[in-house]
Image (cartoon, rainbow, N blue to C red; front, side, top):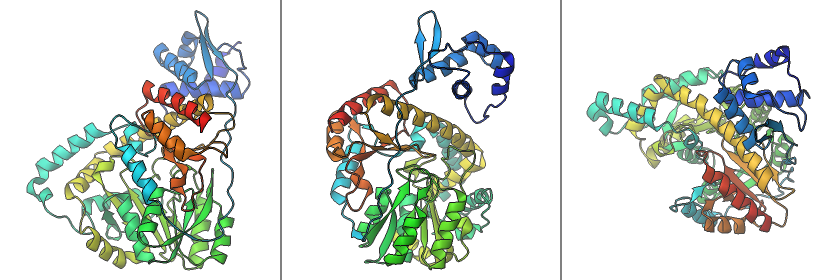
Length: 486
């Protein structure tokens, strides 16, 4: 195969500046394949040739080729170079589910307790819990910032902070929302102890025991546990693997069910990883506000997008103040800091009262540290790297699913976040797979956790929000063997 200077340079100038250099090598080879300049069995450009054409080092090109080999796209032949392999068998997306006919009570406590116990067992590889910040930890910069804050603030950080949160942090958040077209006053924000407290406060501000809450299907199990604890009912709205909830299903449910509020991951969904386009998000808000129904948007993954730009929060499209936005730094910086926030819309008074009653205040030291972390620029630098690593980890894990899991396995293609949704054959029992995987030192999240009506018995969630290491690849091979027996 001959690669002209003109062809190579035309492709090279399309570089994505947000990628690592070796990832640009991966993308270039994919482009050559898509344009049929590379076909199965063809030899890739030599390390030296590609190095000269792209103006990058030979070790960087080699790293890119090794990544392509890891993804199953090329094979290395001794003293011959790298060659394009036949594509892996296609991995299908999860199918569309039918709309649930009735609201149901939530009863998830027993399985959730088993799941959380497994996560914290020593020696367990935690592929079931979503901790994307662990893929690219920022502990050094964060600890450096905390030491500086402790020195500057002295005894101030030993006191209670304001109930609604540390004012400089709220200003930083308000400035960040301006970037997505949302203008708000810092006083409108309420700082919470993580995203979970924000969700709990928002639910209690708009609904009471016995009310029906619309949730995604599948949905984050933390939302289901809150609904169960508060004595509410849930009705499931199916999620499209690409674009979030199906709006026609929601419209049908609104017409036939006494829905009091909705809780949706309106940007990046968990566990499906779908990304709702802005136009669809705007239509969602309009549909609900016309009926006077509050929307609680779980936006903790909003910053972890893989596309060109962040989706605009649903809050941007609200005209009646019926959107409550919940988010946190747990997924982007550090879960242990427990710093979240809530934009309450027109429910500010009730939210403020609930925050005072539930926890009075959040850690002043942690809030101050996060404020300085953002102001220094470290937060955005870390986010840029984190998105790169997570996107790469996603591609690696999807390739391993293709390689090791049984024929017919379906998997989501997340547009952000840190998790894959895996669907095995209909007869598979992923609760049993969960127990068997634990015995092999691997934790997954069984699919029934993500439904109030025990759907998704043949599904499970896998996290790629981890430091990539050979141990992980061996674990995926073991998991694939177990999946064949599930």
